[in-house]
Length: 390
Length: 182
Image 1 (cartoon, rainbow over the protein chains, first blue to last red):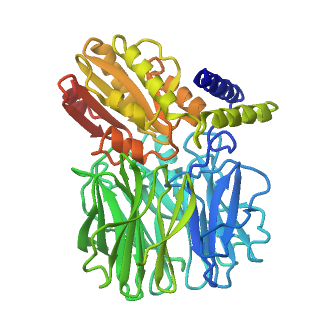
Image 2: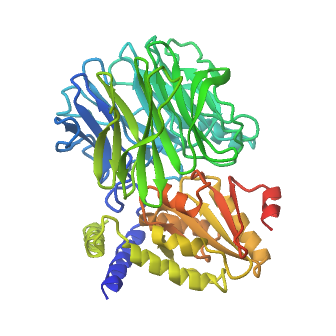
Image 3: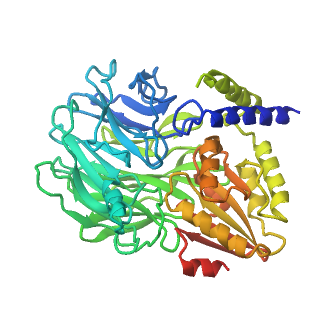
């Protein structure tokens, strides 16, 4: 009888929702999708951004990540927000602890979005009215935003963009996937310049990994498409001096698939310039790889990190220490896994479980503070900051 | 939109009664799977009774070999432009060989996106087949339980034959791959 009542209530609720024509991502009608990001400020305090009820919210921890303070609402007017695994809100800090937040906003049409941005110049007390980052206002895909701050304090945002696919389609020309565009702000996020195209025919829905190079530039590592739907990865430094960026193939797995894997890579660049990368491919069997990128050539020091049931790896580096974290599913739930290298990625420890969740989890994000690594892990049971160092 | 507070109250009531953090209690999901099994057993083309929730406890029944012929599990997602043509191609295959195949669609999106999922199934012309969506907000665990050799990329079709053999193919099916399924 209790179950009948539950089913009846669920049916009533969902029927009412359907009648109102609401869709997912609006907010209250669906549980949080676990898409969150975290970052440390210059004082070592942890900040977490996620979405709830149509609002981007930012929370700060003053106790080393054990608890999060009350949320500060970024967008007072609710809007639709993408907040799932590959397309989650982002947070980054400026040189004076300015807080920058970006996210993708679904538009009315399917597979569309605008890239949105807000900043706080008073340590999270107030946030600016959200602005739309891309100058193109066509109701098409501009989503899967990635956010980074370069060595000169410029805010760089890259995203997946379908304007060229739409143009090709209108002319009856073939076009695989989408394009990657990026732009930047030189005034601390008050405005963004007109966007530049990085390349055509990238994968449509895999996150773009951004990392700061040893020179202070922002580099992108992302799933590309070459030939007939071969979805390996490419690497480029995002030029902000008006010169075209050089894009080079960086992984060579030859995974041919007419699908979007929804499984983007990770990138961390050491002060020695070594480009530590993790990525997923399933040309044969699902595999997460580590390698040191040598754009234009096959990566060096490759390691098969994990196989079946492993997903959404991230990588971080500090000095000569490299960490790799990923989710490993089993019938029992989710394990947060870690491998560590103390010699610049030449050798890694055996995988070890550092946390477990019986319920669903978001993608892990590796963070480094004072040479120590932590994994930001958003779970159905709540947000967790898991130490990665023994 | 005026009904929003009532809707939220109903959803909250639903969550509270289910006694879980997620709207569908596992045994409810299992019941739904069992009833779907009954309906998929003889006539795949029979009108589906809406969208059913698929939890971990329902996967063994869904992936068990059918009594005869083969079951096509069409795994798809809302944010997947390649999925609609794939669903349509699998429906055409089932329609051409109704005695050999049963077709079941499984959206890897949370079942709370019910309206959007059902609309897409209708658009792809496959709304009459038994349809499931995930009872969890993150898909990885259920993906793994359905097929450990699947990294979650969509579309994917999992063909399960009566003899227990399986074929899994990711990506929009080519004519050659469709032939392989036959």
